[in-house]
Length: 357
Image (cartoon, rainbow, N blue to C red; front, side, top):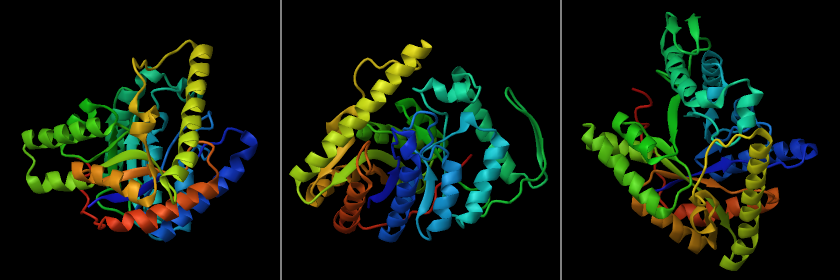
């Protein structure tokens, strides 16, 4: 049955409000821990206020230290912006602080905000290649008790044994993001679970089918396929209220304000820099209410979740606090979800699928 998590992705448009939003975000993490949310996912975005805590590695340490049950995941760490040995070291420390509750979600980095690359002195065109090389270095750092040497395109390294050693053996649990159909198929061939960004129900159904088919064609057995599917997650924005009308009144304006704010910021950056990192011919699913926002009474939201459950996804990454939504409104939505929606789906925790080849 379906599993549920919270994507803690708080917006802060005013720098003077950053501290308040960060405090509210920690309170939301503690609430999710108390209510039995399985995973708290953290984002990484710099310089634009889209994510108030900015650095998920530092913030994850605070979350891990102030919670006891909830798993702490990255959706995702922008690997191309980090030195891989430093990031491997930080993740090993977090894995110890969280006593194995860590999910190291890895991705290449933003495809929209060139400021994030410019601010770190990295060419945005190198993001994918940096990510691929960095992942290899991180896995070797975690699993090489005698140390290792690496000679690649971006890093030439002579690395002693990493300390602290990871709490989880052979290394912290790793999960990759796949923002395209090709990416999902590639991870399926490797027999690895994945995170899917916001898509329509139809696209979600098709990608999961292609993902399963890729695993079968690559020779993975049905037990391994089931484990990978159980550890794969899809993202939706979620607002729960007592009635459908109240959820629409609260959720739709907050969702639309969030998307409009992000659109304006993107256009401003593109105009200032003369750089368009990605062009989209039509509005993507992530900005469309009918695809990206599940809202309604507990009964209505449960029906929408059942549609995802029928596809066979492992879990849903729910974003509850949307754009300018007040913290207390998001908190009530989370309470309603966890007390009146989630109990309708029998919880399960499948054993982690293979985290790396």
